[in-house]
Amino acid sequence: QVQLVESGGGLVQAGGSLRLSCAASGRTLGRYAMGWFRQAPGKEREFVVAINWSGGSTTYADSVKGRFTISRDNAKNTVYLQMNSLKPEDTAVYYCASKLHAMGLWVKPDEYDYWGQGTQVTVSS
Image 1 (cartoon, rainbow, N blue to C red):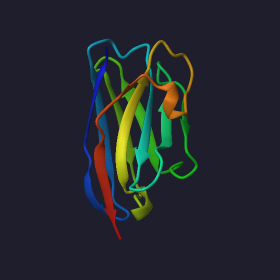
Image 2: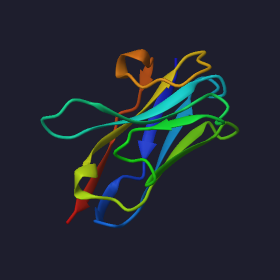
Image 3: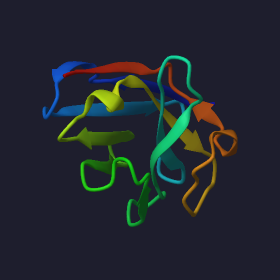
Image 4: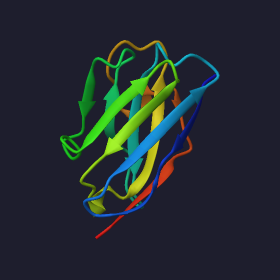
């Protein structure tokens, strides 16, 4: 079992920055692919970014490319999402997810095994 806990969400003005963290416990994070997804009210959960188990490969949704950066520290069992130049349309609940024994990058929600509880990000205009 893996437990994921997100933190770092909040209210920020457009153009501002936030850094989300996702701390894993229960099992080592090292061989898990990780991803961030988000869900706005009335919308489906959408892919934001994924990172492979080593941190050497990443893939981003077009909507966040160039503004968001994912990273991971396997020694701390933590994944980070640095969000810059935030826009009102980035407002959503952000979820981190992990996929067991995964060597690649995964972009579909149903491909992931464990999910955090989510953290709210609100960007005001």
